[in-house]
Image (cartoon, rainbow, N blue to C red; front, top):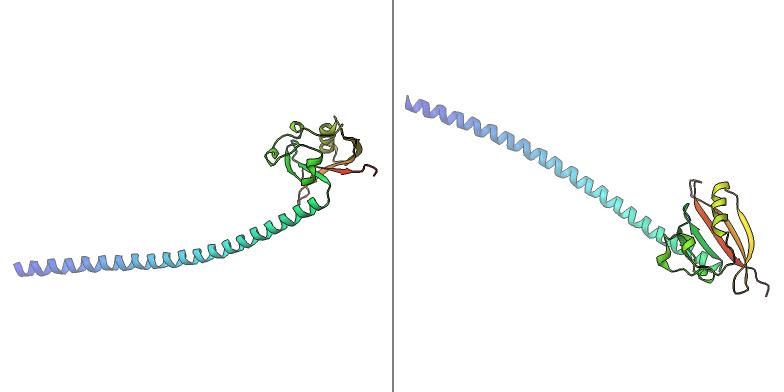
Amino acid sequence: EEMQTSQEELRASNEELQSTNEELQSTNEELTTSKEEMQSMNEELQTLNAELQHKVRHMSQVNSDIKNLLDSTDIATLFLDSSLRIRFFTAGSGRVFRLIQGDIGRPMTDIASDLSYPSLAGDAVEVLRTLATHEQTVEARDGRWLHVRIMPYRTLENAIDGVVMTFADVTAA
């Protein structure tokens, strides 16, 4: 009888071990599937990362091209957001305004200029209100004459997001 009990206990233990083994095999299969999914996701992420790096390099090149184009025109240009804060300026802007790179984000009204044009900020606000380009010729304090053009800044989606101001020297030589 004792032997029969031991055999039953062994059989029960064997069944438990077999059940545990099946659970472990099932878990192993799930882990293998998860590993394969993770490898697939990793490959997709690597592909996306390579595409993004390519786009970043392309955007950097386009940005350099545009900066060189703007600087080569030798026309002072200010890009302002809808609160008239400086978003960007060309190198030639230094001949009209006293700007440094740290001025980006500052209100244009805080920046000293060589212009005799007290209504510049008001004209920019009016362009934002009416969306009509404003042009006039103004004198600088050093005797130069500048043709000022203020127009709405339009995004690629054609939304108005500030103004662009250009200052072209039209002093007679």
